[in-house]
Image (cartoon, rainbow, N blue to C red; front, side, top):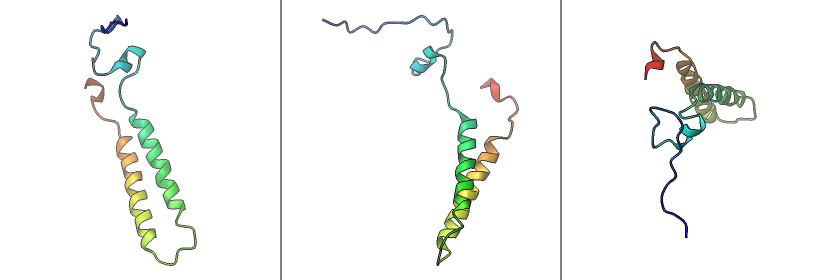
Length: 87
C-alpha cells in the first residue's frame, strides 16, 4: 500500500515558498520581459491587419486601439524600476 506522506526534498533554500513547487527546480516567478516582447509583437501584427479589403472602419478603430494599448503596455514594462530587485 502506498504511503500518504509527502516526501520532503532538501533543496538548501532558506526561503522557499511552499506554494511554489517549481522553486525546487530552480525557477519560480513570472517572465515580464517575455510578456512585453510578445505584447509588442502582437501589437505590430494588429497594425499590419490595417491592410486589407475593409469596407467599414469600425474594425480599423478596434485594431488601432488594441494594438496601441499592447504597445504602450510593452513600453511601460520595459522601463527600468528603481530597486525592483528588493521585492
